[in-house]
Image (cartoon, rainbow, N blue to C red; front, side):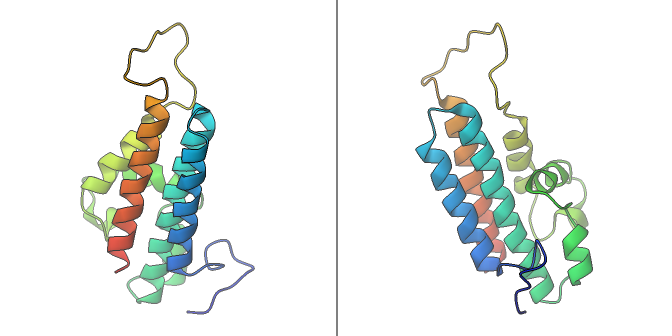
Length: 148
C-alpha cells in the first residue's frame, strides 16, 4: 500500500515504523541515566513498532484501513494500554498471543518518576529505565515476528 504523508499511520511502511521504534529505543538507551526520558523513549518505541503491525494488518487485508486506524487507539500510549488489558480478548490483541499483554502492562506500569519518599534498593539506580527499554525491545521483536 502506498504511504500517505498526510495521515499519522500511513506515512510510514510497516517496516519503517518498526525501524523507527528501534531507533527510539536506542535513544532511550543513550539516555538511560535520565529515568523519565528513557521510559518515554521505550514507550514511544514500542508504540511505533505497534503502528507497524497496524499497517501490516491493513496491507495484508486482515483489517481495513479504518479498522487498523482505530484498533488500538491513536497514540502509542493508547496502543500499549489497550493491549495491556486484552489478555482475555484474542480478537483485540491479534495477531499477538497473551505474552504481549503482560509486556505492555509491565511497560505502562513503570512510573516515569520514582515514587516519593521511597528508597529503592536495586542492582542499579537505573533499573526501572533499563527494564522499560528491555520490555520495549521484547515488544519490538514481537512486532517483527508478527509482520513476518
